[in-house]
Length: 236
Ligand SMILES: [Zn+2]
Ligand SMILES: [Zn+2]
Image 1: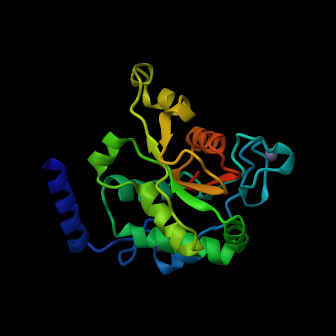
Image 2 (image 1 turned 45 degrees about the vertical axis):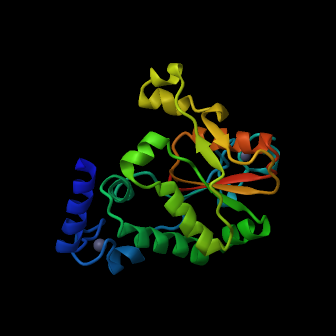
């Protein structure tokens, strides 16, 4: 009930108070045209294995490992005001932000990184959102990774599949704090809704920090037959 009320209250607040720019706080838009023009869509991308610079975050040919990620691309650095914008989207249910993220992703891929878009199309990737823990999903009402995956699916014209699910924490993991838990994620934390896979996959999540979640999922997908597995995150 409290959750529903918060959601409704936020929706009313959103309509009463028009958005203001996350960068300069001027009212009118979530990102005003002046600040939009200054956005850097060229975040330096790194190879997810050796962490050295890499074009489009693709894993260097000599860094490729059978059970590793074949690429990891993030849109913007994990700092303000991007962090606040993502936080509001996830926890304050500011659903109107969906269209802003949509525009940012489309601009990034179509205007600044068409090669990445072409790579996904050439590889015929199937888009897989990183699953949320079921209890968190219930509380939050939506899975932001799934929303983002939908956006990417529309832009890239590649299909989306809810292929992976999350298992309940085991006793050992339940005792760990959030940080320990994040670094303890293994393929055993997930299950797949199909056992035999083929082809290439693109994992989608909102944030990548250590990359353990992406890696665990990539390993699991590859053990079940996936060929290439790369990843996309909004912030990294
Ligand atoms: Zn502004
Ligand atoms: Zn490398």
